[in-house]
Length: 182
Ligand code: S3P
Image 1 (cartoon, rainbow, N blue to C red):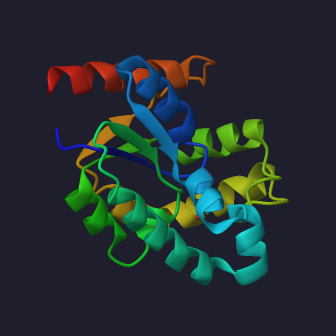
Image 2: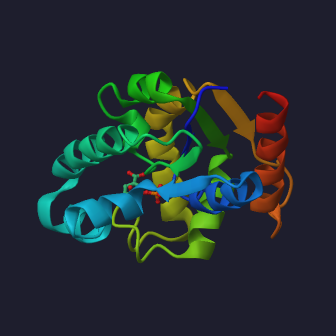
């Protein structure tokens, strides 16, 4: 498996939580690209989007991923921002840089998980709840899925009711997969 690993997927898919757990299991580094963006640019993603808009954010986000990819470390799990793979040639870039893994959930579960983690810190979803949130997720996913689906590996989240240990289960599954493919 080519390294580093990039976790991709919609907001609420667990990229950060799974990424952190997985990196811990492997003893590798973990980088959340939204946090790295904030560190590099001196402003949070939320504030940046609010101040300069989504187009400017995408451009900076792209620079940020490219800059970090120049670091001479391979054993890293990156959690990408949810919209990153769906912009320009970003999906191709990821596939060239390492292995991309799509954490796939159905839209209903995504909306539910987003609701549980809160929408206040998510500029794109702010103030959307319940049915309105679900419809928005469905609408955005209908445009994004074709990009996410290009990932090297797709991991389907459990289909049943949501459970507290879903992220841990996914991290464990990925851990096995990586160990078996090294
Ligand atoms: C975004 C997802 C966010 C963040 C920004 C835009 C998106 O990251 O990059 O608010 O367009 O899906 P997370 O997926 O880590 O929440």
